[in-house]
Amino acid sequence: MSRFLFVVPPLVGHLNPAVGVAAELTARGHQVAWACADPELVGRLAGPKAGAVFACGGAPPGERPADLRGPEALRFLWEWYLLPLAEAMAPGVRAAVEAFRPDVVVADQQAFAGALVAERLGLPWATSATTSAEFTDPLAGLPKVREWLDRRLAGLRSAIGDPAGEADPRFSPHLVLAFSTPELAGDAHGGVRWVGPSITARPASADFPWEWLDGGRATVLVTLGTANTDVGGRFLEVCRDVLRERADRVQGVLVDPGGTLEPRGDDKDVLILPSVPQLALLERLERGSGAVVCHAGHNSVCEALWHGVPLVVAPIRDDQPVVSGQVTDAGAGVRVRFGRVTARQLGAAVDSVLDEPGYRAAAGRIRTAFRAAGGPSAAAAHLEDLAREFR
Image (tube, rainbow, N blue to C red; front, side, top):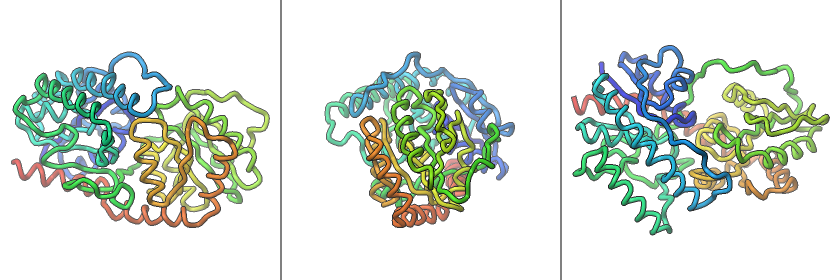
């Protein structure tokens, strides 16, 4: 039996893949614990068998300006969120290590405190790469941003890691688990263990009106994830118009967690809810016909493709442009411009992925690769090997 400490940021998209791996390790007889700035979120997503959860310092206050895009958004993400988060989490991660005494630290790729504290204490650590965007070098062509980031990471290592260390905290020299496969992401980074998505059952969510769905029409799910409620109003409005125009053959399920859409009398063919049981709904789309319109968040994309469902992707920021490029390069979807798409353009994209069989065929090929990769079982096996290697 080994002990594994998962160090994760307080973000649903980063926790969900780790939850499946942790559950698999627990089922194999190992002990699991967590270090996170939001213990309640861990408990909600991982359920009653989550194991010990150690609280860490939280994310910095304030919000990112909604209009930031491109390199400015990337730099702001690092400056405002990722680097301060690492500094805030480090004392709690160290306390968790001292209390739990793990054999291996499993550090999310954006939770640098896990990697650097493990490095400082001489513990083996694995990277949990919940997005494959970092494997494509998002800073290519931005030498000044790269130079700035290298300086900041060096300062962070001096503060909370081993000053003599050399490993990039985003890429463990021991083990990098990537929750995708080369069929979607490409195999551009050596040494990565491609385990495919970590898709596992989740705690039951609010009731969904399954009787509302009409088996004679295609279903289109529209979701912008959990972190984009501040910027999604216009896009969701365009989606509602597009779906309403196609009500004779399409029904829409539109996720609006921020309540940005005002009710309208013609919404009878567009179901608007603050949340949906996404995996169960995707299973329904897999058995019938349909598509997903989303922001190209890595989890949303992988969950759709796990079910062989084609996509319309409208990237907003961060890793989303890279992931959307992966979708279109694989032939599994169509990309539109989030901030400028018109109803005509979005409608044409939705029609394409619903009517042209090549998109669903490409999504099916990725589904086959994802399911063959092993998911949580393969990830757990790699972690067990790492624990044995350093025992």
